[in-house]
Image (cartoon, rainbow, N blue to C red; front, side, top):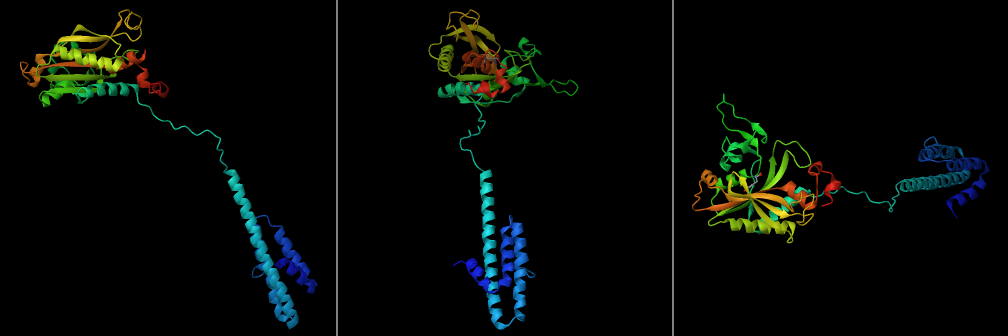
Length: 360
Ligand code: DAH
């Protein structure tokens, strides 16, 4: 028998208490929230509650009635407590269900993509070229992008009157000020060649170094020009270095970077810091030498400048040209990337459009 059934049987002994019991149970049934349940509980069982007053009235009753009314009152209190607990649990349960329903997770939804970066094509080409030379025993050396005239021009055998120092090409940071007796020009380096001078100045041969980095020129940006661009410079100085070493080294490099099937040729050229100087071409990527719009019918594409280090340059760094010889080379990273990957506009390198970069 449940307490409630016991209560309903007991109350038949005191019919005048039936209304109280019915009202109490009915009041609880109507409760829809925790707040209402608590209010009803206080109204029934609180200090001034209707059930509590039953116990207060016991004092005036004769002993045999006291027992019956007391028992009914106790049963009623227990039943109310049970009901209150059950109702509370019920409401809390429904609350939890509702919360969980609101939180449901649709496991069929596609995941959110994280924007993962991609190595820039120029960084890849620099890394590839560097790796090839490191494999040949070269080490990497870097120099400042803000450079002194001495390293960028003078010690590279370009004295002040030299036409290649044209103002039109150089971005100056500071020009000499005659009043302050301050003769040194400071500029953004126009090529990575000054690193050669800085390395030779600090060390003695044998030297096999590669210097990737940024260079700057006063150029308007268009499909083939940018004021900021990248070069990879190379320098080898040792005893008995010959033009044959230069050719062999750069041929190996070209074949590793562009593929074995590519032909290489050297054309005489002029650079102030090398003598003799040359430009190296590779057979056209598009037509493989037949002649097309990319190579302008020549079948060849110019890839880099190179030459035997001019004895005058050795003079600036205190090397004896009778004891040491060397070769040097320099290449434009953007140009190589454009030729290798068939890119016809340099500006895509600087837009950082992930859709472009992800293709490589
Ligand atoms: N510095 C040259 C340029 O910016 C490239 C170059 C040519 C570098 C010949 C060299 C070299 O070291 O030997 O166009």
